[in-house]
Image (cartoon, rainbow, N blue to C red):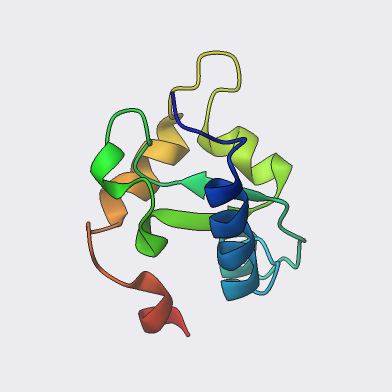
Amino acid sequence: MFPYGSAKWKKKRQHILRLDGYKDVLAARYGRAEPATIVHHIYPAELYPEYAWCDWNLISVSMGTHNKLENRTSGELTEAGRRLMYKTKPGENWRKKNG
């Protein structure tokens, strides 16, 4: 199980939220301004532990967007979450391309 309650994760989470300007990155792609409160693993941490701490694998989103990316009961990616994962190349800094 990923250590979401750890000091290391809390520090990383704050870093990613700051990096993304505390904005829901995916909502912004559609012209919507929504505050981000969650950092989502594009490649799930349980399945891809080697990517769990990589900035390129973490994206700031709102609770609403997160619920669209991940089934909150099972923890599995939804179709939208899988699309985002397939569009994200491991190791590629997508923030540079967009910013």
